Image (cartoon, rainbow, N blue to C red; front, side, top):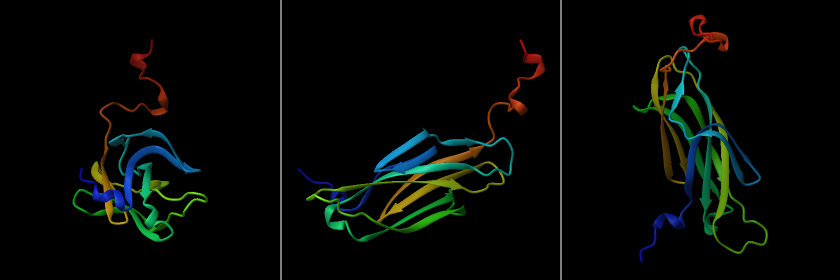
Amino acid sequence: MATDPTEDRPRIDSFIAADWAEAINGKLYLMGGGFDTLWAPTFPFAPRFAFGAVLRVPWNDTNRKLPIEGVVETNDGEELGWRMGGELEAGRPPGKRGGDVTVVIAGPVQFQVEEPTSFVLRLRFAGQERSIALAVSAPPFQIVPGGQPPADRLP
């Protein structure tokens, strides 16, 4: 049986866009995850959402710095104003004698678009990349100011 060569390298196990995401004590907490469209009531619009990811670091890659980068780009590769980057170092937990180390990360994403836009949220970690195709669009429904239904629709 052939083995997957990515199993011996640091990798992105999961990557998701959500309304809110937070990494606490090795767990990823999400609300409103898995969408592909953000509805903009008016333009210009500043989308605000979060990303969450679960990363795996093989034992032999722990205790060393690994590059990590996130970016929001149009489908043509133009950056839209959000970028994060740096290095991540997964330590060896006390008493653990081998195996992968799991690292969870989360963070906010915000930028501005002038019109309906398709874009890609990318995460690069230690030479691997994952991306999520997203869009900012005008809603296919009427937004009512103040949360009240139009007068002709009142009971």
